[in-house]
Length: 489
RNA sequence: CGGGACGUAGCGCAGCCCGGUAGCGCACCUGAAUGGGGUUCAGGGGGUCGCGGGUUCAAAUCCCGCCGUCCCGACCA
Image 1 (tube, rainbow, N blue to C red):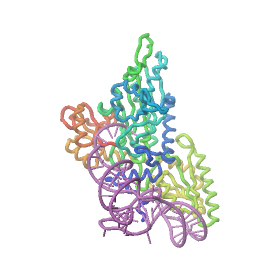
Image 2: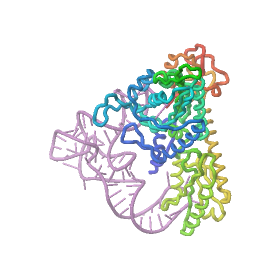
Image 3: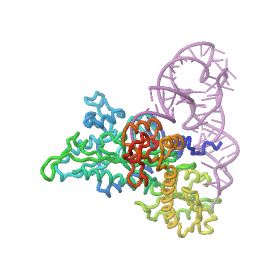
Image 4: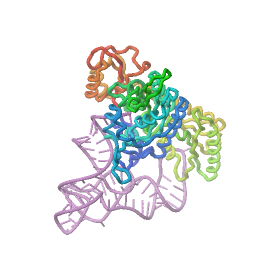
């Protein structure tokens, strides 16, 4: 009877658990349009917190927001050969407008490089007009064959930064800088550790010179690419005639970068932190950090318990968060629902901290504070509840990152991995495998074919093994790079 | 596009094999009691059984066709 209330996370059926959590916690729902998702207020609330924080970080690094059109003339995409080749199979194309067939079809943007650089070409004359550092928050469409809530939908929300620079070095610096911003956000706010590095040619963005990405490990040991930052070189500026006059008087094409993160991060958050009771949202991203559940027996108790809850809320709300804004506190005064039912509901929704206040507590001038991440309960004095809660939220945030990192490292393999062992790992529980690679795309493709695992990134220095592999995992030739292999979403 | 499963109340499902008044649980509405970890009792509302055709006195059930969804692959953030 109670079976439909349970969430059971099992290694062999992680997807089912994930779908259930997303649907039951009311983050999102399936829409009547196949492959598209409706993000419900609770899910959007998390996305809003992400947006808010990222926006601050973008502005701190000198970027401004703007907005470009949803429609892109089909010919624009064709101007960059690799770009159109990469995106052609995934395009939604508008052929009619105002009841008439259009002379030139309009593509619903799968990404906005082309239309944005066409505009930049109008705006730039001289090196003095550079750099251009613009971001847009938008929705894009990619006609994927198979979809999954938050992780891959036909339409998704994202931010895409697009910059133009006067030198190659500046472009590279920008691409790396934004990768760092993403990393600070994912580790600092999402409490989700990531491995950063460059993509191989096979996996890089269509039209990029180099693609950097951030890879996070989910609880089923699969990787999710949670963000990318591309050094586009002069590929697009040449296609769109984005030129400028240099200080010396010559003409030069600008150097571009683009970088983006999507609502996929919400899915990654669920798959990183969720448990059998539902979501666990890190405090810095929780739309509500604290829920207060007053408990009463009699009408008399009800009055004093509610008054106390209101007072606690007031003192908590005045408390500065470590992130912008103040603590968000909700008092659950609903009648006709037992406290236990409320507990389950708020746990499902992942609210990081719960404070229970009942008559027995009031008699002792205390409340009970319960952590969502560990389930730990302890009494706290009403005199210091604000300070204690703020401090605890901070510790929860840290603990969640540490837990996630330990889990990842526990499922990572480094040093002396043979190909047989590698296949074993991928056939069993999977994980992140750091192994040598000869740099040959054929080896990469063969391994992918045989094991379903792909090179997620060529990791940055700090993630590489202390004792770098000398030979390629597959062919045994000299290794030119260490690669991070994993199955991916 | 290949392989699998499914479509019956808002959600989850049973009924189908063997044709005969459309059911159960949750949710919802009303009332009362209850209230420190998923309350209890009583009453109530809600359905063109995915769509179209066929067989039959009679179809949720049998037959044919279509549509749709989910899961697993190929593609990808």
